[in-house]
Image (tube, rainbow, N blue to C red):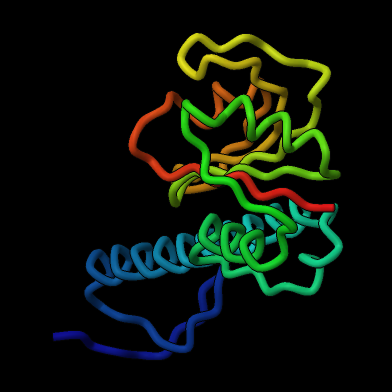
Amino acid sequence: MFIVSWQESSFFYFPFKIQNQPIMKSTIFSLVALLLFSFTAVKAQNDNAVVVKEFLKSIPAAAAEKISANALVATVDAIAKKTAAKTISLTKENIAYALAEAKQFKFGIIVVGEHTFVKISDFGKCNASGSWGACMPYGEGYIKKGALVSQQGYINNIIGRPDAQVRTLYLFN
């Protein structure tokens, strides 16, 4: 049972004093930790939404789109699907054709499943990939591992090896 009385501390002013202080101190500490964690999680989601907005800003049609902080990669996929001039599903067999086609467009974004999105940034800088059987251009993007993790390099190192995952190339004028 708690006994409550009024007290003024020299460090903090609490309008009451609880006699069972060890339990109260641990309860207050737990509540403060929970609040800090909650604010950090909300801030991280908002920061990730800003990162996605920045990533998509070079595509004029995507500027007005709303970014869902809870499903960032799915949001990028939906916006790209809605605004792309051309869409190509990537496989080992068609990657060389798809990349040659991508050179004809202003922007290219590859979305892999629900975890990765990458923008092709430099076709002049490419690296032969044994697993894909094509010269893979340089790109910049993000992999969702809880938070978004920034990635830069040849796109084969970002999108992974050819397998059953769905990889979609979206091309924009």
